[in-house]
Image (tube, rainbow, N blue to C red):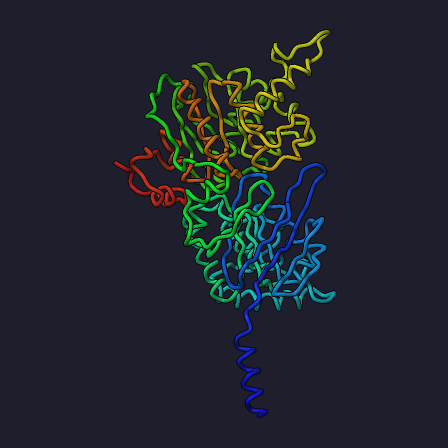
Length: 527
């Protein structure tokens, strides 16, 4: 009888279901009047890759910030491996086996890989034993998960792809069983993104659980097992990835059909509007960031510049936008020279008909403590229609103008009196896009126009850029997103290490060729 009982117990144990890695029940979070998360319930299976998609402002980042301890939920419960946990801060999250790889890496660039991995996880007062232990662990982790990185390399000297590996190693060293990755491929070449997905699949095979937040629906389809859709703070549904499609997900996210391809007629380029000759830029550390850059930009065309972040595109936009001086070279606008000295500024560029959607909206595009209407007027506040009595600005006219742009560009929430810091990243971007496009510039400089922007807003922003081109304006587009470059551009320049590697027509190239050029592996010019 005892044998029979043991057998029954063994069967019962064998039949016991594996608890999910994560269960969220009734999670809610508000920031003042804005309800970021509303009664969210979600289950993530152990040893799976789970995608989360949604519009900007849908609450994805807030939800993950609650899970990682950055925010405390107003209501709801979190279960890890079937056990209720109280995640009060990131240390509690790490203790629960959760690691997070942020969109903007949390690394100390002058430190080595080893020092970054150990930092915050030291054992005892002496650093040397911790470093010795970490070195052995890194070697094993690198072998287990294809995460080869030189432990003695200076982090600031690594490519962004390798820096990302360091972030993953940091989490694994802290014994993370659950990894959250926020827009992980935004700064990677196609080859680096492919390698990342191999790493994620390898982690999954080893029993790790991955949560992937991305607006790239092709990535969701390629690498995830299931996907949760968020809309306006609520979790609308969770479905097996095999049972959906990019078109279906896009519609579920925004509540309408979304065109995943840019609809545009062939360009009809006109006269040269801007010409760049022999442009050279040296940064404050004496590093040459632009090396003899030359190109022309015509009315009625979109000239795309492809490249991995950090290869001179930022400096090019900053020089043309009036934020940075050049050491040599000539830039003309309608045949007249533009001031490239330190005396130049963005205001003078706007006066010459140059608009600018900067890469970094927080540093260059917005004043985060200003209200939406103030940011929409920013840089154009001296327009005649904004002049009031006694030399003062007409704030009523500015607010009315802002309300019109907020409506036309579907900025949410539709409140011109809300501070920029209280909008989601995608809606912050739409504030900048609305301001610059509706200024109707002769030349629009566009840096990463859809960074952190959802699929519905991407479609809208792309169409606005195309409309500006069709109105005879010249567009210089910088993006790390090859899909964006290929679908929007009429011509493509590829930059690597401050040099233009070559020019391609979108119809005569592909992602592989552009990816190789972006990595500095030049091939024979396309015929």
